[in-house]
Image (cartoon, rainbow, N blue to C red; front, side, top):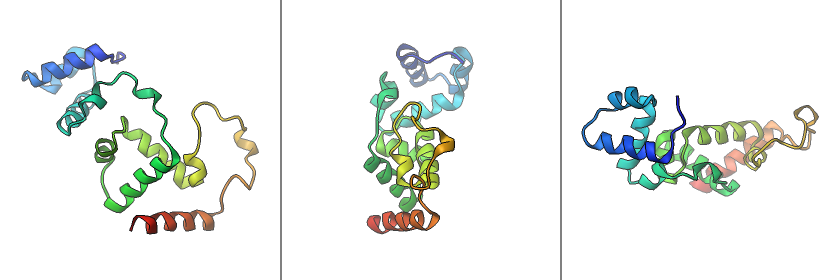
Length: 147
C-alpha cells in the first residue's frame, strides 16, 4: 500500500463525492476501502481538517486529555471511531494503545513520552509499577470524577 499524501487524499475524497464508489477508488489507488470509508465518515461528522491534515503525526496529548478520553469512553460506552470524531484524534489505535497502557501501568503508562524509553524494560523497579489494589483505586476514582 503506498504512502497516502495530502494530494492523493484530496483526489480520492473529491472522486468519492463525485459518485465514484469506495471499492472502485480502493482498487484504483491501492488504498484500503476501510481507510477511505473512515475518511468519509469523519468528513460527514464535520472533521474535514482532521482527515486532510498533513501534520497529524506530530500531536502530543497530555495525560489529562488521555484520561478524559478514556473516562468518556467508559462512561458513554461508545466506539473508538466515535471517540476519534468527538475528540479529533486521528487514529483509533491511539485510543486503544492508551487504554492498554492504562490497564497495564495506570496513569504512569499514560505519561509515557514518545521515542524509545531510557530505562530497560527488564529493570523496571517495583516503585514504577503500581500494585493491583492501587490501580483499581485510581480507576474507581476516575469513574467517580466523571459521575
